Length: 411
Image 1 (cartoon, rainbow, N blue to C red):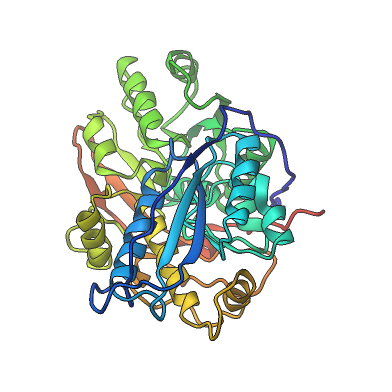
Image 2 (image 1 turned 90 degrees about the horizontal axis):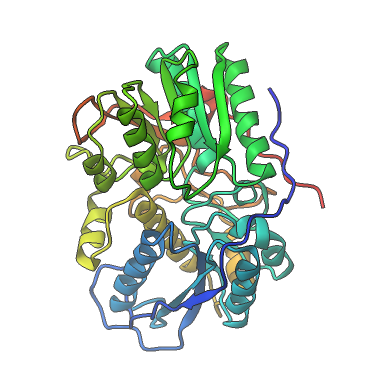
């Protein structure tokens, strides 16, 4: 199997930095709403997010911290959380990283961005600060020492959805519609495809890697694909764009099965499509649309109490905040950037607190030059001409699907 080649590449600039502050609320011990609200010296925490794409992740973080603060905080100290919007722009992201460091943040929590890790991972290393990513996207979120995401990431998602499509659903001729963002992303997606082909003996019969985020129409992409021999289509876009791709396929008379990534997993996406073919994806966390799954009960209650939409991004933010609190509560003495980083690296037991059942593999920060703690996905499907997610399961783990962890980039 090919190893994933990681090299820092530029990402197309979109717009300038906008600073978006999320105020901290007073207090909470353990987030149970009991106790006296914390009023001591705040523990400063930051997050970098592309709020256009991932608004729910930092909202979920704030919800957890608000409840924790209301219950007494950490020995009476509230968590003060500020989110910096990187606007999906490399220069803006670098500026946001500097602002986060200047704020005195002891850690990054719930960051969710298309490029934060690629742009800022060396900054986090140089300043001895760790990031508990809510939604890790680019390769450096999973291949560098100071970042440990709550989610599996799009490359694991792609490996899982391809495996599920061929090995569980029986699709033999899969065509691909890919957004690659940059040369690094392109190389990684092709490595995922190579690894899947080597592990299963199947082949991708057609690839269109010309898609760009936010394009106005997918008519040409679908028209070109129609001439290929496909019995399913894999697409790696985000939910709204996935819905547009599927709508165009329907407009052109297709009913081929679609294989998507976790980013499409929401009630809003399901309600927006009414497609003649099945739509499948691997969820990075336990299926929150399944009324019989109790592992998401506490998460859903917190989201509803704080008005946060139920999405996979909100699951990642919620868990990242819970992980932060768990590590925080192991610290004796002053909470500083150095003491928190030391505590994160000293983590030897997997997280087993609130929401621990929401992942298929145990989450741990710990030592290491790279971190892919979440390495399992749960298959779901929208049956033809319906608008409801159906839980399929069971968990697909990295070992099972032949996922090859990222190598740490040199330099």
